Length: 295
Image (cartoon, rainbow, N blue to C red):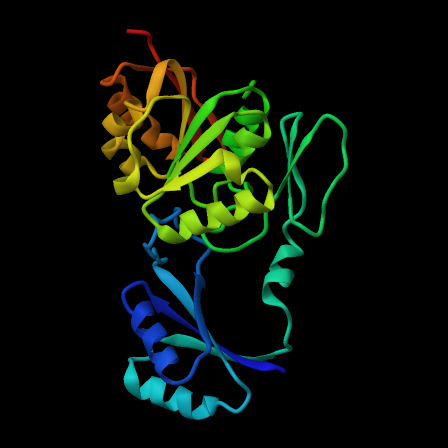
């Protein structure tokens, strides 16, 4: 069945109002994309960050009266706030599969492949992780995650204990376990992220080694490797909490940090006896590798 797709450009303040308007007039889905090719950094779980100029896209069934919707919209909001109206007819397709055509198997280091379920690879001496788009989506393609996966693939994980703080889809914890870690605890404030992590762990047959917690459910422990791929602000706020999870001489991976934010993050963790190796970066994103000095 074909669909009618309406797109309108708005600002970040008005975009949510337009989303409500489209939903109230029968849209089956509403999404946001950048209208000016400006980056927006990964939001916190449950948070929606918008671009200064945001394209709001609404999908309607074919019997929707789009001309009437257009007229109501122009009566509802000033043209300078909602402009660049565009209507097109889309043929039906499996949207997730369509997106996944652009998600190809990716190798990290010498030992780790991340693959969609329908594009597996066979290579001796490597580990294969199966991951598909879904809740708390994350496949390792973003530099913040890719740098962590490279580090994991290039270091021994044998029998290590791991915590993934802000786990998202669980990709880092699963990579660690598949590469030999004995146990991984995953913590996230978003129940959907924990659901995604559990589902992905089952798909990769490592669920017996991975346990998921909301922060209030988690009993603090100490680990050989602590990973937090979130954002600079939360990393700084949680510096004491995250540092306390490290065993003496344990390793710390912090990611989701822009190059200009690295110094502030380093300063926050140095106050908790964490020392850092020279930072690594990919594009404008960096990863910090730290360790807790023995007391």
